[in-house]
Amino acid sequence: MSRLRGEQAQQRLAPRPRRTATVLSMGLMLGLGLACASGPDPQSSGIPGFEPTMAMVTAGPSDHYFVIDSNDVIVASRDRTLLAGTFLLVDDAQLPYRRYFQTLPPRTMVGLMVMAQDSMGIDSVVKASRAPVVVYETVVLPRDNSGNPLPIARFLVSAVRNKVARAWVLGTDTAAGPRPLSDWVVAGATQLVTGFPPSGARNSQLASQLADLFSLDSLTRTEIPESAIPAGVAGDGAMGGSTSGRVDSRGRPTTATPRKLHPQSVAALQAGSLVEFMWAREGRGIVKQLVNRTRRGEPLSAVIANAVSLPRTVAGLDSAWRASLTPPKPPPTK
Image 1: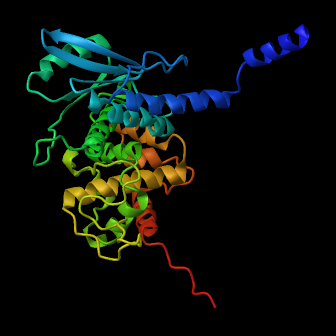
Image 2: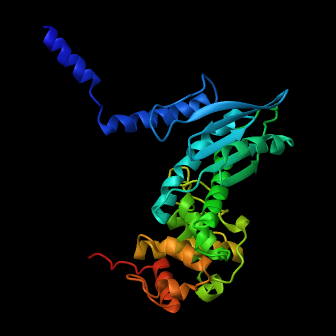
Image 3: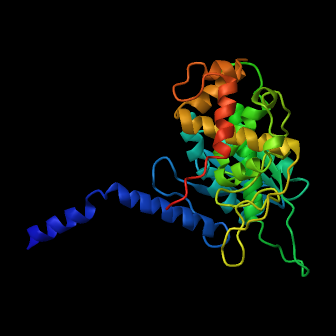
């Protein structure tokens, strides 16, 4: 009997399969989001390489900031209810970045400023974090007629995630060359990392404005401001006033024509569609090559000169990409 009990005890203490660690990680993320609004602060997951912590930093007699830190992503704000959504989706954005650049992004600090003096208070947190990438976002809390704060998580996260993705792209392999990246490369790679807008919605918008599209030679020289890059969260169907991806009250896709966009917005969407097309055709490594070789001053023609699955001329690439926007309709079934 004692031997049987001993075997049972060993089975209980045996290492769990990896699936258990995954479940624990998912449960931890959910609990972390809830803890940011109420309940005790999470201290450690016990999972090596993750271990999120919540801490309160005192910057003055009545100035306190909450900081959530998970090794590679840090978010700080005096309003702790703003931390969870921002942290979770910025942390999650590391995965698509790694898909396109074959490495994780650098340690990143996000400071959410609610009051005018927060920039000074959060500076101390920034210095302590030693994060090479720092993104600040001023948060204006919307309120209802009674003065109660309204939920802003989705808007806030989409804006912050866009800024973080852009900062990652701009900072990718800075040792590769001294030149700044072309706007179209930044706009295109940023959309890949955020996953917004969805490919179908973006290409539908471009297909509705075929006459307004830039030649690739022009696109590489076009100024695309950060404000022209659509901000959103993967899964959102619509973008920038477009009806693409929207559904009616019964969940059916709408058939209204997408609203005509400003040339800079068209350029931003075109950049996102083109870079995604290049990645889908050429596969692993092409986005990283595009970023690094462009930073060294090499033209697009040099990037695709030795491509395996892409046309090896800019004109050929332009033609193939445009054809992908309006694929031929399948023959009618008999």
